[in-house]
Length: 68
Image (cartoon, rainbow, N blue to C red):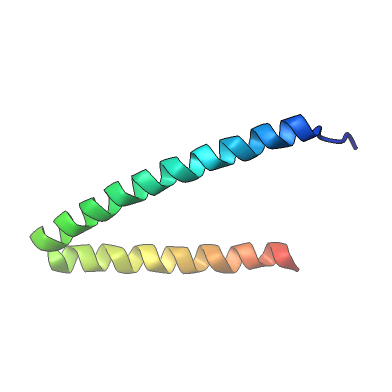
């Protein structure tokens, strides 16, 4: 197995920081969309949020399989 250079690791860490910052901004935008949806169609929005939550729960359970 090849060893990754320190220079390459630093590069990857910078890319991860850029991804994190982009995700922060995008999450802010998603929350704004959620606010608009909730104000305009609360029942439908809550149903969709429930489906998203269920899918997130399934994903978390699947991720736990990698820890074993």
